[in-house]
Length: 210
Image 1 (cartoon, rainbow, N blue to C red):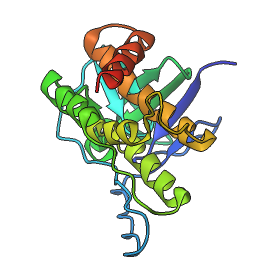
Image 2 (cartoon, rainbow, N blue to C red):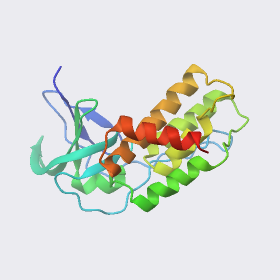
Image 3 (cartoon, one colour):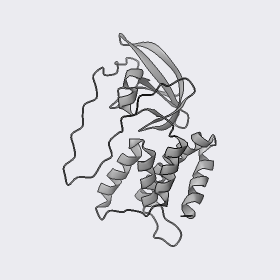
Image 4 (tube, rainbow, N blue to C red):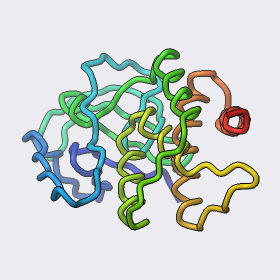
């Protein structure tokens, strides 16, 4: 199968069809707050204004680490848009994000070494597991992973990590843990200029030492 192409309209990536509609020009709608007794979801963070150039490693909240392939002005259904082409090699997908929407979409450059050290410090902390239904906690964990915030993702890894002698994870816990670990390792690997497996090994050794 060929590489998947998508145009990002900020609120929802749309897979391109032969007749593609233009990304929404308006600002994304503000999502209503969850009820007071609902899960404490982590919203997609609005990134600081940054200038992206070809070759940059970037983080897109719901897809993780990608690489800017190029930035070009294109005509999409009669609209002239300057688009950032981001490739995600692992899932063979290219996302095209309008430059004007990059900040509200949460697109950002890699965390600084200082910021990532703060995420590693989170891993050293004590797990904080709420006494609520797993389905609600799982929803909160997924929201943290998709926030794109390395600190929030580190919280998920910390809370779901199991050392030897501790109770095993359930299947769904393991899935979410691996998803969070994958995101964190992808960014660490890009920072260290190593592959993701090496980064996972480094994070796993770090957790064992906690």
